[in-house]
Length: 612
Ligand SMILES: Nc1ncnc2c1ncn2[C@@H]1O[C@H](COP(=O)(O)OP(=O)(O)OP(=O)(O)O)[C@@H](O)[C@H]1O
Image (tube, rainbow, N blue to C red; front, side):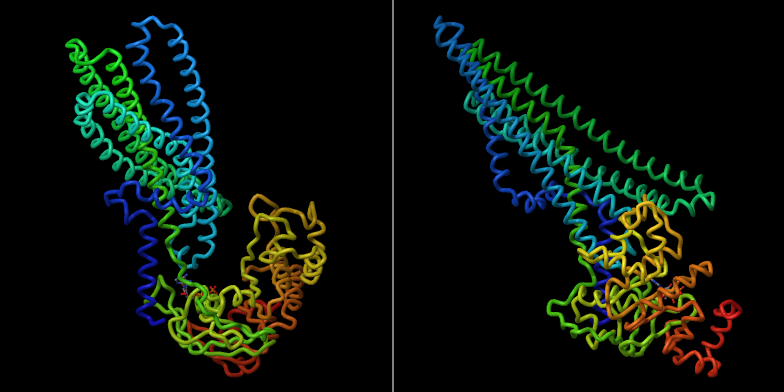
C-alpha cells in the first residue's frame, strides 16, 4: 500500500470514528427513522414470525373497527325497532368480536416482542463479533467504555423500542388508517373536515420528533462518556485509591452524569411538550367536528347512528394518533440508537486478511525477516517509530532485543503480529510477507508472553488453554508443570477450576507470568515472542520464571525483549535498537568489546543484575 493510500485509509478510519463519538452528528438535523429500516435485514430472517405478527396486527385492527358499525346499527335499528332476537344476535356477535380482539392482541404482543428480543440478540452478537475484528487503531481512537455503552445501552434501547413501542406504533398506524377509511365511508363531508385538521396535528409532531431524536442522542453520548470514565476508574481502582484520587474522580463522574441528566431533561421537556400539543390538537379537532356533525343531525342530513359511528371512528383515529405521538418519541430515540449501532458496524477493520492469501509453509520453520522496515503509528505519522530496520532470524535462534525505553522494541512485535501495516519494506514470517498471509494462520505461528500477562475471568485451566478448543486436562497440567505453575495451582482453593481475573482470585506477578508461559507452551507455535517483565520478582519466583522461560524456548525461534542480563548473555544474538533504528547486533561479548551503545546500556541497565 502506498503511503498516501495509507494516509487516506487512516483519514477514513478517523472520520468513521469521529462520527462514532457523536461529535460529527450532533449538530446535524437528524434524518427520520431510516436507521430503524436498516434493521430490516435482521427482521427478515424471521419471515414466519413476521407474517404471524402482521396477521395478528390486522386481525386486531379489523376487530376494533367492526365495533362502531355495530353501535350504529344498534342506535338506528335496534333501539327504535322492537326485534329482541336481532338485538341478541348483535350482542352475541359482539362477544365473538371481543374474543377475536383479545386473542389477536395477545398474539400481536407476543410475536412483536419475540421479534424485538430476537433481533436485538442477533445485533448484540453481530456487534461484539465485529468489535473483535477491529484493528488496534480503532481502540486507540475510541474509548472501550464508549464502545461498551453502544453494545449494551444502545441495543437495550433498540430492544425496548422494537418490542413495545414498535408494536404500539404499528397497531396505531393500522388503526389510524382503518379508522380514517371508515370515517370516509361513514361521512364524506365530516371526513374532509378531518383532512384539514390532520396536517395541523401531524406536522408539529414530526418536527418535535426530530428534535427529540437529536436530544436523545446527545443524552446517550454524555452517558457513554460517563460510563467510559467509570469503567477506566474502576478498572484501576487500586491505583486510584493509592493516589487518593477519589474526590477528583467523583467530581468528574458527577459532572458527566449531571450533564447526561441535563441532556435527558431537555429531551423529556421536548417529549412533554410533544404530548401536550398532540392531545390538545386532537381534542380540539374532535370537538369542532362533532359540533359540525350535530348541526347535520338536527337538520336531518344524517342519522344519529351515523354520527355515533363517525364519532367512534374519529375517537379511534384520534386515540391512535395520540398514542402514536407518545411512542413516536421512543421510536425516534431507538432510531438514534440504531443509527449509532449502524455506524459501529460500518467501521471497517484496517487490518484484514488479503482476499487471496499466500499459504505459509508447512511444517512451520520459524523464520523471521525484517526487510528495511520503516513504520509510523497512525496517530503519530510525523514521528516514525522504526526506521529502515533490517534483520533475519533463523529457525531455532534465540534473539534478544535491547534498547532504551521507547526505542521501538514492542513495535517490532506489533508488526510481526500484523497489528499494523508497515509503511516501507516488508516483514516476513517463514518467507511470506505478513501482509499477504492469512491473519489467523499468521498469528497462530506465534506464542506471545506479554510483559503484563492478561488473565481472563475464567478458570485457571481455561486461562491456560486460552484461544484453543477442547484441550485435554492432562495436557494443560503437563504444560503447567513445565512452566513450574502446577504446584501453586494445586494449592489454589479449587485447583485448576479456580476462577481468576476480574471478580476472581488474584495471582502474584510471578504466578501470572508462569500461567502466561504455560499458555505459550500449549500453543506449540514455532515462534515465541517474549516481553520480559521489568518488575522485579523475588529471587525464588525469578528462578522459577527463568526456568519456565528456558523450557518454553526449547526448539522454538525466540525473540525476547530483554530486561535481564542473564537473558541477553544466553541469547545467540542481540539486536540493539535505539530511536527506532537497529544500531548494533552481535553476541554479548562481541558487543561489550565493541564498546558502543550496548556496552553503555549494559553498564546502566544490567548493573544491578551483574552486582547480584
Ligand atoms: N499506539 C501508538 N500510537 C502512537 N505512538 C506509539 C504507539 N505505541 C508506541 N508509540 C510510540 O512509538 C515509540 C516506540 O514504542 P515502543 O512501545 O515500541 O517502545 P519500547 O522500546 O517497546 O519501549 P518500552 O521498553 O518502554 O516498552 C515510542 O516513542 C512510543 O511513544
